[in-house]
Image (cartoon, rainbow, N blue to C red):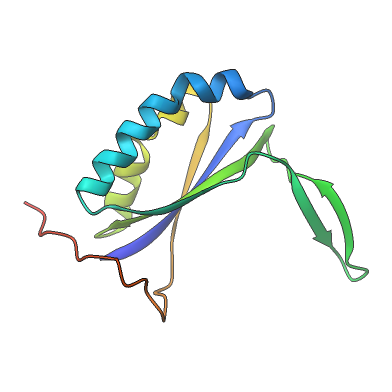
Amino acid sequence: MKEFLLIIRLPLSYGPEDAASVRGNWNALTEKWKSEGIFVTSFIAPADGVVVEGKDRNATKKAIVSSGTKVISNLIIRATDMERAVHLAKMCPILDQDGTVEVRELQPRINRPLDLQPLPAES
């Protein structure tokens, strides 16, 4: 199995009400993925961070915005290949709210958490 990073971006207009309206769908999807051994972890970071830039290493509180969207969370999932990972990414409820999901294959980690169990064989 390989690990894939799902980078979740949302429109700048996305707010707490939007998040609340989709939370149940996200919870159901991640619980399903957990039961199937697909979900590894997630990192939700809805607030702006600090961006360190350039040779002067200037630090500014902001988000990097691209095409009117900003990163608000990342998920790590397991899949056999990129095609399967993209199939799983298409299940993300955020897509119904004009969000985007970027899928990237991760390099294998040297130290894996002890609680990761192997995935059952796909049928």
